[in-house]
Each structure stands twice: as structure tokens, then as C-alpha cells.
Image (cartoon, rainbow, N blue to C red; front, side, top):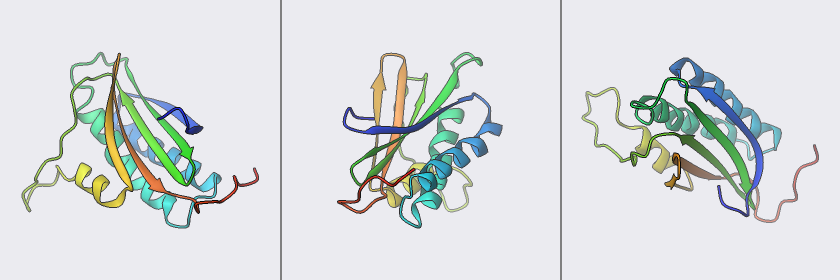
Length: 144
């Protein structure tokens, strides 16, 4: 998340695929609580599911089981950014899945549905992030 973005919420989950549902709900709830546009909570939930699943499946394979994955949701103007941090330095790459494969389409879905996506290396791992146009250009922050 960049320095201009306001942090709307963050959550740490253990390295357990059972926690993907909790991460999905968290991202969806943050988007809804901050009154993102009507379809943004659904899209954010789907994309968070893909990125968190990747972090738990690929991003932590050689990392101790006690490590966690952090999900941060922020706002920079009209954009909502979801940033998923894990302890692995391996750079994500998009795959070309065969029509019969049941996996390998996550980042393609993220690329298709997000405003923008990418990854950043950090001293203790990496983050994979995506942005969604969630609020009108000049919208004031919603009342809480």
C-alpha cells in the first residue's frame, strides 16, 4: 500500500486454507462498511479469495507453519487497494491453464476484473495487491 492510501482495515490469518473464507468476508465487509460502489464488495471478495489462496498455496510453501498472511485494505482517492502480504520472496506469475485444468486462472481473473494489480518485494517477503475503482472521483468519505 502506498504512503498516500488511508488504511481502512487489516487482518492477519494463519497459514491454513480454511482461513480463506474469513479473509474473503473481511475484504467484503470493509468494502461494504466504507460504502464502495454496488458491485465492488462482490468483486473485492472474489479477487481477495484468489490472491489469499495463492499466498497460502504458493507463497508459503517453504516458510514455517507459524507464519501468517496479512490482508490490508486501503483507500487512495477513488481506488480501494487490497494488499496481501506473505513471507515468501517468490514472484507471482500468471499461468496459461488448459481448458481441462481446475487451477491456474487466479491471476488472470485478478487482471481481468481489477483496475490494476501487481506485486512488491519487502524485506521479509512480498505483497500482491489489486485496486478497484470503488468510489466516485470526488466523493467525500462516507459518514461512519
